Image 1 (cartoon, rainbow, N blue to C red):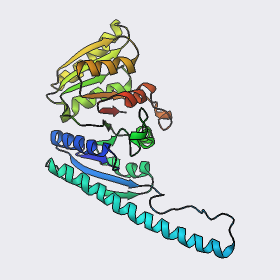
Image 2 (image 1 turned 180 degrees about the vertical axis):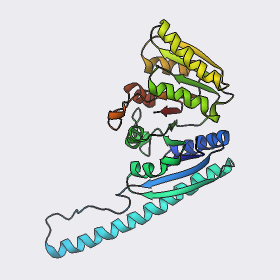
Image 3 (image 1 turned 120 degrees about the vertical axis):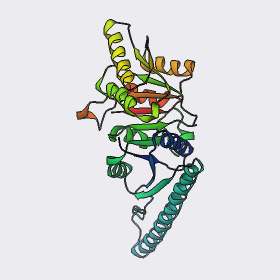
Image 4 (image 1 turned 45 degrees about the vertical axis):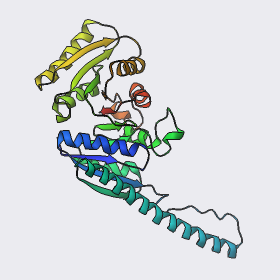
Length: 283
């Protein structure tokens, strides 16, 4: 495992939670934290021609005014981005976690792709700056990140609380097996209460899969309970999280490699939309 995590901050209500979770992860895993804020192309001053069919003299004056406004907007975006990063760095410092910050320009996915190669994990808030206007919806950037990143993706809930009880959703798929393996190898989960559950009928095959997953954790010194729940995954897992007061959900992304850029399992996306606790999504 590498020793760096990347935390994406955008100034939304979720940014503080991202920082709080980053501090918790860094403290438990001795990770360095890199904060990243990405200015989109529009924020960077790449304006559009809004002049239309205007006479030449007026058009030239308007274009100059628009260019000046774009330049001012770009400068303000840079100042705001730096302020967001400094606030995030101060939040981590208050938890005795050092961080370095990156202000990037351009596309978010491209910026992440350039930095994620040597990162252990990417952290992002469930929703962005329009969160209060998008109840029940994922941020558009988050959906793009979920589909694009190759590293484990930690999706922070709106509010932070220390993680003590972990639920692993397990369906026997390759990504679910990698999720269990990640928990087994990660220092984050040492000493926590862990339960592995699958959804469906209590068949011998389902019980065998759960026992195999439990054995993988046991080999790493982690004890886990197992369980089989009836019903639909989104509803059954959500109810269990609420009823048993779990703090964190770990699950695999069930997309296929050839379609990964276009498709992520519907259960994964629905759980991200509805789950009230932070989720670790593992490819």
